[in-house]
Length: 243
Image (cartoon, rainbow, N blue to C red; front, side, top):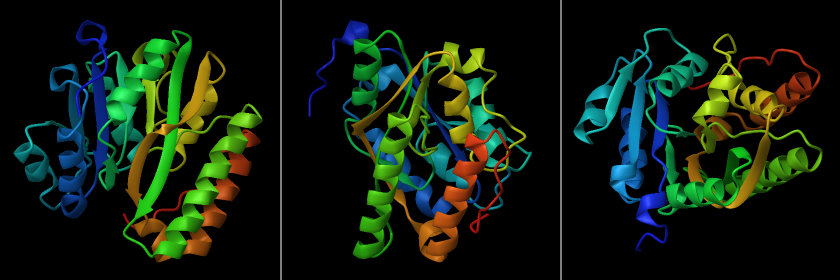
């Protein structure tokens, strides 16, 4: 599919992927980034190796992407480390177990170009590596959750599918590295105080449902509870059955 944007208008984008022992999933994620309709000269991929003990770094290096080490464990500090190292005027976040659509970066760039006041966005999500029923329930839950948040003026990023202007990211102090969970939601809450954040269903990814599949009830309860805590200005609770 040809790129539909004017080559001279394309902003440089940095994709940041935090990764801890993700050799099993990382190749699929990086392969999807190789297939982007967005010009390859206009984006970089940064894999933040969060002190992995497997071949995460070797997998990343085999794709020719930048590998940035982060020895302190935690997704928050890994995301922020990669974002601080980013060269792009737009920082895009996703996960090592997420496959992005071929026009993902093109759509992200389009939305920022069309609206100079836009400082951040998040998008739609399908779930993979699970059964059809659970994937459908998760898709509906997250779609409604996102649309509800934006409708009430409380936008919430999905960590595996968001993008921000670097200037705005730095202006709010970046990701709160003290948080062990929900760092994406916290970032969007703070960024919404200084500018426009929007949800776009055409900025689409497929992310692994492995955390959801391992304990569906706890997964949904955890996310809902953290959402309520953060809307009340309290710190979210940590829950990660994978790490």
